[in-house]
Figure 1: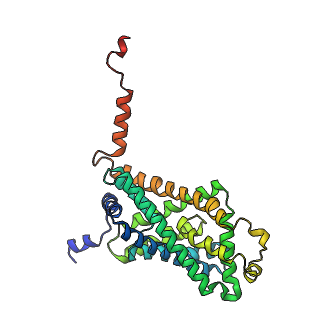
Figure 2: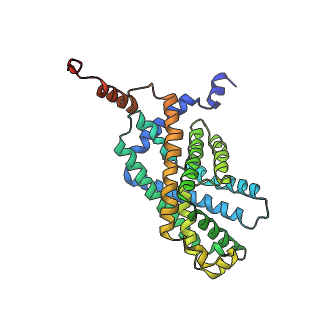
Figure 3: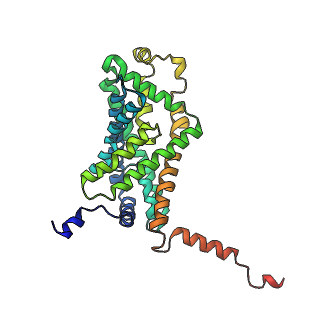
Length: 306
């Protein structure tokens, strides 16, 4: 095999990865709204399918806690594999558009337009999948043990306090965005899959919180909370599910987890890699802001004579 063929198989270097992330961010931000929304709905459904796969694996498996969590994390990676390899728009991964924004290649308005459309589309896809699973009565499988797992997952998530939910969201999307970042080093689909699985398995096994996955987990739990057979299988009473409501979903989980996801993805990954690899490329938002601060701090002419 020639040297040229060998180099074509090598992973992209981090500097090249940063340029690729920036270029893709520009393309994502400039997609028309209908395409963006459609791809976002797909991504929400893909993540929900990964969450559903993990739920089945966690149910009545007889494994130790750590091994069970690890196995569930490995199969949950299906969701991001479908998003990346199949092509879709995921809110948490799109936090990396901040790299193009920081380089002034994406306007602030376009950044928030993308995030808003994608977040809304992800919710539609995830909730539609949850409702479909409910209609399919998958929750009756294994003598209602699958439904019990679904209910217990949702109830745990709405029981989190604000700071733990925020922090779990930060760590989660740091790992999700690192998985997406690693995909930009890949040259083949196989490379991308191998890049995705370890970070996603890590975040799921560690119990970190993903806002889009929770758009599947918690609504499904809400749909199941009044079924007496599921309650019995889960060992729960209605009195123990007082927080498993739409209000609890939004305020106890979705808001803090989404904020944490943004911090973890946009700041801890996107902003850091932009600073390392792209900050010296062109005049950027941060250098312009620093220059403006220096001009404001400069004493006005004649001020020293007063």
